[in-house]
Amino acid sequence: MADLKIKDMNKVYPNGVQAVFDFSMEIEDGEFIVLVGPSGCGKSTTLRMIAGLEEISSGTLEIGGQDMTNEAAKDRDIAMVFQNYALYGHKTIYENMAFSLDLRGEDPDVIYEKVMDAARILDLTSQLNKKPKQLSGGQRQRVAVGRTIVRNPKVFLFDEPLSNLDAKLRGSMRRELKVLHNRLKATMIYVTHDQIEALTLADRIVVMADGRVQQIGKPIELYDKPANLFVASFIGLPPMNFIKTRMVDSKTLRSKSITWSLDEREQELLKSYIGKVVTLGVRPEDVREGGNMDLVVQINENLGPYSLVHGVIGKKHMVAKIPKWLELKEGDTLKVSFARDKVHYFDAETTCAIR
Image (cartoon, rainbow, N blue to C red; front, side):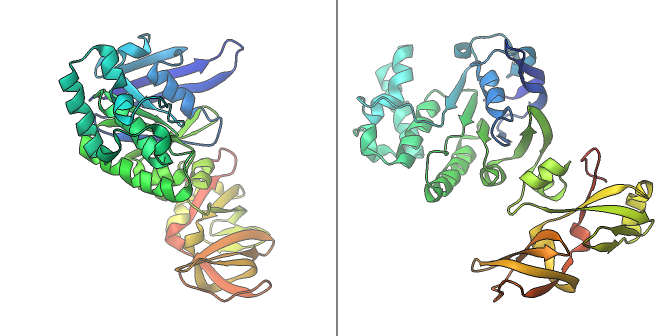
């Protein structure tokens, strides 16, 4: 296994389009890193540059202390799992898992031992004589993972490996991948557009947008302390509520929908914003039942242990996640308040968090 050091990595295509800008981070040996962001944000391109499938336009890449910036993919000692399983339909599961070792000319006894070890880890021992078409989607994806395990690479790369699975199977495979990482203690870099996968799998998350890193941190750091409006809106389900306000004096934020009085800590935090626009953010789970604000109900979604109440405060659309079953219909009014210690503030011009 190995650590990675990536410094100022860029990707510029021949037509001048730049897909990745100055990507830099250090990944520790055994870390599970997840790159997350919307389609087209540059996460898969970044992964492919690490893999050697895309040329690095500028910057450097070290794997295990060795400069791999210009090395061919085959010389980087990495293994990659793709969105499609890429299995050989005419070969058995055993043959699929053993294929790369056969190409290397390894001893058949060593191959057998490695394949059986991987099969035991992935609960595939009873499937080894079957063909891929006889397996479920989840089993086939496990075979694809097993094919990388037998190689014992320095780094495992995953490019949206669960995207083709249904929701229930994705949940099951997420848990299996987490258990696998705990067993192997391997360095893993995983690309997804699904924030749930990112939050549940990652030791650290890299949030990307428009080819640029927006924030790197542990899942709880991104959730509790988003660096900017994009991260705040992308991480969390349902997304954070935002209200553009103006700081009318040293103690008050005001919009057409709300008047928000600041406590002493908030006054100190925002003292340079008097007369300026500040975006107030509050997560739906931090909109609490009871208070002096009227949330006029548009839709109420009862989801068992909690209710998602969609409505308006004044003219501003808001979502409240109330931890109980509520009997509400369109036009009803729910009294709410914001959990003061959970309110976020963002500079309306730069979109950066105010801290």
